[in-house]
Length: 253
Image 1 (tube, rainbow, N blue to C red):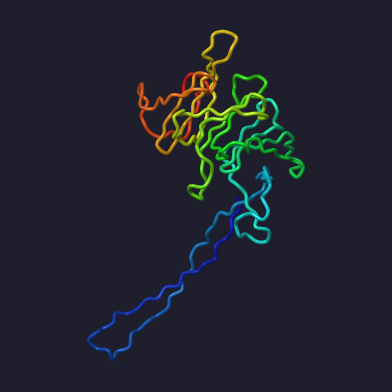
Image 2 (tube, rainbow, N blue to C red; image 1 turned 90 degrees about the horizontal axis):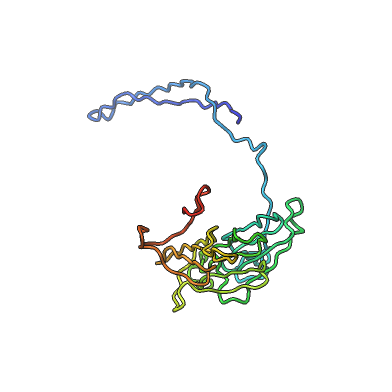
């Protein structure tokens, strides 16, 4: 933080009373210059502030927008999931571009980072949330929620429920929230550390927060089947945009 002196001066104009009944009389004025005390104005010093490096998929060239010189366009990254066992592997969920993965993240050499699209075959590329399963020690199980739209309004993919991979993104399974259709837009998805299977298997509890007339959905079987629990057991009805687990209690959200 540094300070700079403020050297402004105050200019005051005092006017004598004007008699409106005698327009012929001239108004007397005198100028008084009064110095103000020196003042200090704070200024921001950017020393020791870390710089940011561009990461992620590069812009498309010759896109549908008119931005010279090359009509470049980029999509919004809505969610980021870093492999808890390998910080060089990152998954990103994009608003209208699906899920991407990098296996060679290197902050010291950002130009060498490469990205692979993982979900181009699905009817929806509108990804609102991506998260690792805490019950998979291999860190190959991830969940993603669909239905996040960009500022272009109705453009983007449909809300088709949840995508799940158990092989690090090589293949994905799609499970709708409502098998009959009309899925809500998933704003956040949270694979919990709760296992419903007392045996060797895993029946993970997964939560999904939805908006646009949705609420909180719960799955007790690894995301395959879902039930709307908003409005039940003391939980109010209405949209859910974020879900946070209590770090001291895996059963509290």
